[in-house]
Length: 129
Image (cartoon, rainbow, N blue to C red; front, top):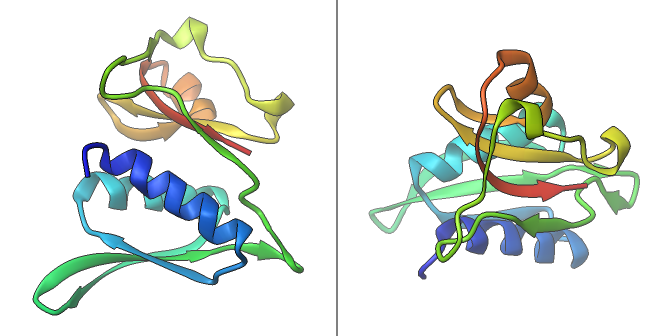
């Protein structure tokens, strides 16, 4: 697995389209921080770290509104081959505020609204709606 963040977001996207309730991923602190951000925004119900077969895993519960998932689509912005950075003045909303962009900033993993509020830019990881 060369890009663990891409693997995480593609797994979440596929699981929501297949109407799965939970997703299990290999654990890392960065993935847990991203998952906590998505829980705070309501795209995931919960994110927890567990140990299975002496390996740490991250278990994500996908949030649904009725029968449809809240997570419709995800698009990776910054890749390992091409990093994309935004200053605070360059950050724009996604789908007129219905979606969000997730940034890796010096103050941690933040959404576009939080980054503008904190007046900090950073690497744009992905956008979702």
